[in-house]
Length: 545
Image 1 (cartoon, helix red, strand yellow):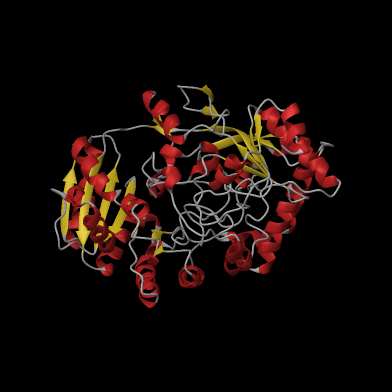
Image 2: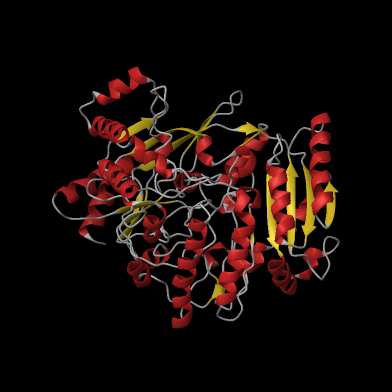
């Protein structure tokens, strides 16, 4: 163990590890990249985080850099949960519900708590936290907040940032701040502080005032955009101010989250599920457009395409029994309504059914939960794509997190199929089609030079397609290292400069997750590509996407 590790172990309650096995394990996350850390720390409390940050800050002041990367369960597909310095692992100890108010539904939790376990607890109180990602059963709240996660209910309930009302954050120098919406008077008190917190508030407020015109350029006409930083929601027209939206989705590049305050929604387990099929992109576009026009939106509008159906059927055809038979449709849609079972539900179900009967090929309405489970199991066949390898080829997470305006969905799909046709690959698609989000993971062998070259060709053409349609390169997930080189293609130099200034305000020594959102080139990505890819760390769960 190094002198630095010995020193930290002496001053922290949590464990410090430098063993080869630990270093090997934490050198990868769920991305295609690998970076070996210096050490791994399992903080037991906020004070451990504070001491670690203060120590690295003092080293940085003397010119010695040891970066810090916060990590939950390592499910990140963009390379944001790896780094060459200290990995702070929260899932071991900082995984508690600190407080829950059953009347208001507000919950205070530590970042290492498992999203799915929290959801189960909320359900027992008749509540739920929307925007649970598909990896929620094996990922953490801290990771979800850092990525501004979302799930199949995005179209109705929005992204996670809507439910995060406050945070406790350890700053780069070890100071701890609490965030939340404050009025002008409260903001003025913050601006008068002589601490690093006060300096941050002064600089952020000044930057937002100076760059008002530039900030508007970060808005994209999609339901969810995670690219860059969220600068729009910090300061409102009424003068109120809140750093919470800035930290949500920042992937640990501005501060280290030690506590999360969450609002929740009432939970209705009795849903109505409709499954429909259609045979062409034009039909799909009309259906999605009409569903988005409804005043009472479905809680989910999901899709899988015929390529995925055929691939999954070849692996395990029993999932299809009683639901679909070959030859399979071009697209299969899943529409969920979570309204109470009263007149409104009947009215909305009738409207949705009418749309589907007019434009879809087949329509099935299901009210009974056990039958709904079978239909959702069909929707989740993307897990077969992710976990089943064909020899050395595996589904690789390099593209598939972009989003376009739902009115451009048809053009998006046509463009995707053309890109894959040129590269002689078969795209199997799924996703939150109602929100314009389509997922796909091409099967490649990243140990082969030809396939490694295809990775970057696919990314280049994929992001160019999305941007040509007015979309975002980072939607359901985030930028990480994977999409950092492409941010400057999405945003102009003025806005990128504002992002960089914001990073410098919070992290002047570039201690916090360097290389994420800034400072990673395409050549850098090539240098950290793994020689082989596997999701074996997830096999105790269902590796969904």
